[in-house]
Length: 417
Image (cartoon, rainbow, N blue to C red; front, side, top):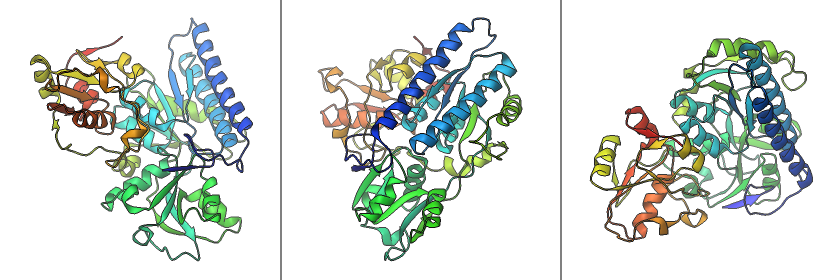
């Protein structure tokens, strides 16, 4: 997979959509903002409650992203302080892959994030609260002169795509899965961009035949005179929204009222938009899409929580392939941390060479029963680790597809650090 215009990993640098110095400065400001928020939280010893908040402003250019982050940060901080006297610890994020993992591990009290993150949070116990963003719709775009007229006729063409965990990419992959194909199988090549606006350049210089972007981005391009057409579109999903961990003493209704009250004090970014309540059914569509792992893995045995408990008693070794923070927040008793460094695509055609996994940490005896787990059916790390063990010659590989969320739901023993 190639990368284009400020991609998040190695790739070709394009400076057409902003200077590197601007990106670095904004990233630094985001980091300083998070550090300042944390310091404020530590200093507020008299606060009755403290909330951890993650804010991902979604797929925007750096300047818009920072403005959106700042507006939401101010609104959430004011709301939590007014309702609970809380000094929230705000963490900025531009890494949706990490955010999805954080929802499964329930690492934050409040998420402000795109629809697929909020939808994932709901599956792990969070309650949707509200949104002020317009709905998001993914569209596949080509020039009017192109022979491509639908998804089927785009087969074999070169695709331009936002970064892997963009809501647009999430929706497109889901639609391809529904059509019984994948990005890798359907398109001859993929050019990946960090910013959606860069994909217009990909079309113009003829490196892409079709590109996937948000409907609002396409509308802006057409309004500027670009001769473009939509050849496929997804259903609409909620825009940037808020979800609350139910264990909090703050109720969703109280948070919604506080957000609505403080929203009006933030000039500019929200304009005349009003807070819109979110309910579970708003996420029915996005919840059916995404990066769910296959239901089987050739050579491995898929097991449930009860089977894992029995395997442990029989001497099997259980490896947790999540990251250190997730492991410390809660893990299966007896599990060993063996992180899988994932950079490859979340599909069955993933490129293992893009990832990192220390196979030397597995026992020398290839007949040792091994169990691999991570964060549920949406987490690919244990699937990929199981496959790595099989390729290394281990003969008794068990894949705990339901992972830690299933174990937790079964009320089995959990350890924390």
